[in-house]
Image 1: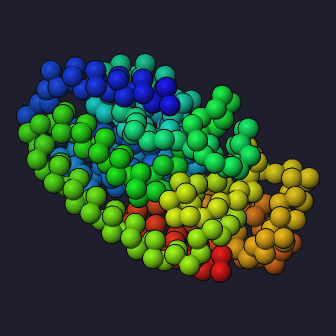
Image 2 (image 1 turned 30 degrees about the vertical axis):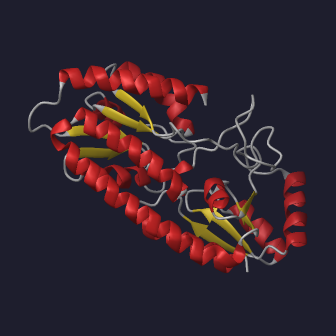
Length: 296
């Protein structure tokens, strides 16, 4: 959290410097985001006043992603990058900043209490308090609509400061997005009300914040971000048998084979979910329905 706090302070300084220069009349802000859900959030708030580019395209994995030369060239001309804490950001952040020293880096995790990722280093699956030294923190904050409201507030504040001429529209669009997020949150709670406290097995632990928000328990097949070895796989299969797991959820960007191995051993079904879908609201509802059906 110290890094997030520091970035929050850097954001405010960057906003002051940028706003002192101002945005040229009639010129759209050039904004970069890491993943498609962020593109949806920015475009809902900004309307047509910004140009949004996405780093990780459909089908690619944020775990192994590397920016293309074309993207690096486009980043050299951009004004804002909305960070979300994905692994490739840490790997490329310094190079991106060197490529464009004037690029404003805005960390949308600010104000959000991060949880250790399930199956991560030194995490035993208990409570999710403050970060401990050596723990890997879960970056998947966009999969909780409650936390997206906080991210959207950061996005709105940034855009309104950089482009004050359109501040009122940004704020109105933000309010409309929050209304939609609240409505989806209520619908998801209704869908999942009968399965609270249930465990659901996933390959990659993308759904931790979602599980926390709706009273579920996520059980990952991955161990510390890696596919399980033979001994770990045997333990997972034993666990799945004891718990009566009948569905294993796999991100559409992941290798499906380890999940299929477990599924065959326990006669379960493999269901793909997409944590990176751009049609954010509909995708969350589809995910909730799939989990509700899969854990009964």
